[in-house]
Length: 187
Image (cartoon, rainbow, N blue to C red; front, top):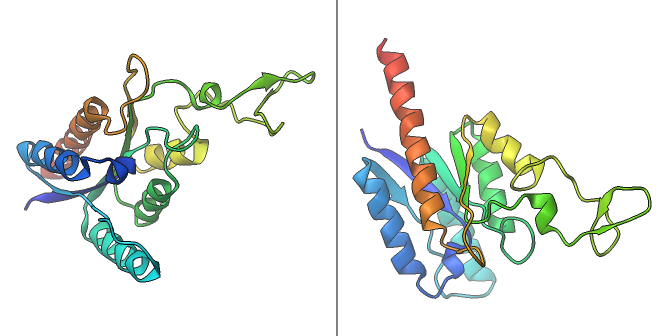
C-alpha cells in the first residue's frame, strides 16, 4: 500500500507552481509516497473558489499525512489557507509535518518595537507572542501534537517560497515517522 501525502503552501502562487509541484511529487515518489499537490489553477470567482475548496478537501480526506509549507507569506506567518488545511488534517488525527525556508523565530519576524512595559509589540502596538517557535504557537503545537515537527532552513537572504531544502527535510522526517510506526506494529 502506498501512503499518500497532501502538501500545501503558498507554492500554488508561484509562477512555476506546476514545476515546483511536480518536483515535490517526484521527491515523494522516490521515498515510496504518493504526493498530492493541490494546484488551484488560474480560475477566479465564487464558482472557482467552491471547486478549489471541494477538490482540496477531497485530497486532504484521501491523504494519509500532510506536509505544510510554513514559509512566511504576505506577513510574518504562514499562508492563511495553508494553516486552515493544516488544522483540517490535524482535526482528522492525521500525521502532519511543517517546513519553512525561514528559521528566524516568529517573534523576530514580526515588526517589533519595545514599549515601556518591556513586552514585544508590533507596529500597531499589539502584543507579539514570543514562545521561541518558528510560527504561531497554534500552528507549531498542532504539528507536534500530531506526531510531526517543523523543518526550518535558514536561507541567506530572502526565504525561498518553494522551500525545497526544508521540504526534503520534512519529507525525510515523515518517512522516518512511518518507518517507525510500521516497525512498531510489526513487533
